[in-house]
Image (cartoon, rainbow, N blue to C red; front, side, top):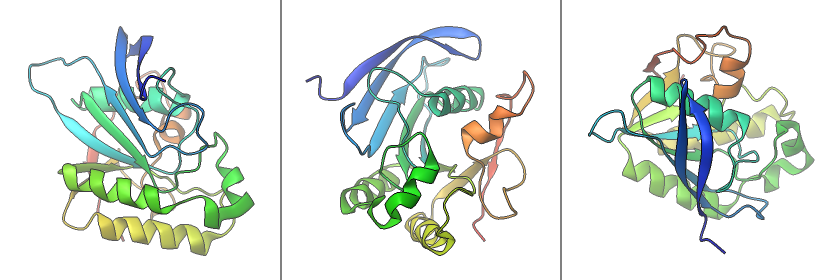
Length: 196
């Protein structure tokens, strides 16, 4: 066991091939993931860090990124961040958010809340990126979870990807934001986010 430390070799970040150091809690055989830390190559001597909160973990682990992490790394790099910590509203791993419908009450656990609070306490800037999650059928439970996390974020400097919101309420998810955009899809500034 490698304690969740690993490296993503040969990953292209804004046109530059990098070997990226990664720390993953829990390891690749877990059905949950609580924290994923990504260390991009620093363009300056100054380390600029950000906490990113998304919907739920997909397939990224200490050995390989997933499409969402690839999009996120490019967006963060473009905005000058080289140290990224990822947490999620829900800790259950699935590349298909509709699977959260199988048992939405079990999609999160106490350990995720503890790790999330700990990470929030360590960061000044937080990129909110959980998206609309329109595949989640139990909207009331999804909204309750969003409100819980927004309460945890009280007093933090919140950011979102680009201008506007999904459905006039939710900050964009990195993959869905970049999926339908042009070649310059990663050249998007993070904007201030004010939860409604």
